[in-house]
Image 1 (cartoon, one colour):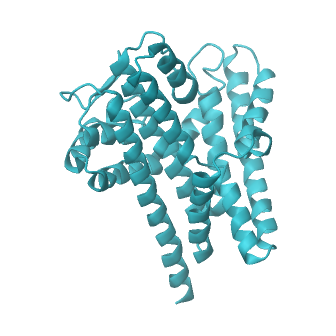
Image 2 (cartoon, rainbow, N blue to C red; image 1 turned 45 degrees about the vertical axis):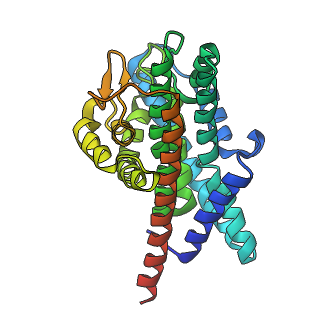
Length: 317
């Protein structure tokens, strides 16, 4: 595990870039490159055959993860040769590409705005485009609010806490490799006829990679509820009670903590209900979930930055 005080500076610089600049242009964005590679590889995948598809999916995952580890190592070596201020800024720019705080918050705000103007068609389109892969055509206002809150909570883990966690323990190579695993799972990890076996390996590896970050995120959401004036004790109670009710071994942790903090019931019809006995969510709860996400992000960044400083002090002593 490589820890140094410079990482703390990089973490906060990356957040500053996210808040002030937003997303990198697509042609310069490493995640867009990853998505392009996965899409091209998928076009050549075996058709509807179990073992060949399974092996091919494993090769895509191993090859892509290995390549991103190598590119991350190269980026670390290149940035280390720059003068210190430029080195920190360059590394922070690459790190920022692995997470997105403002984009997630903005997606939630857009859905909230559509619901508050009773534009269900737009809200359904926004939720489907930005946040979930499920069919949203028949969701009502409360169900759209629930889907948005669930996605904000889950993406706090997948899209913010996890990349920062892996950067803390393994630098840019680990953060980029995690982002590749998460991206390949989001593109191939479906149980349809085409991708059932193609996505087996990426789905399982993504589960393993997110085991710790998902639980850390639930803790951060519970603590953030104290800062935002939400119900921290109920967040803890619902998290411990409902975290295992989802099919995913990880998604239920941040989602149930958010449900408890907000005092709402989050249901995916026929699949799960988190926060049973609480009221259905409304558009105003989306704003609260985004605020909770920002609080959890601040706590995560503070803890990970502190971990890098403590690690440096221990090495020096």
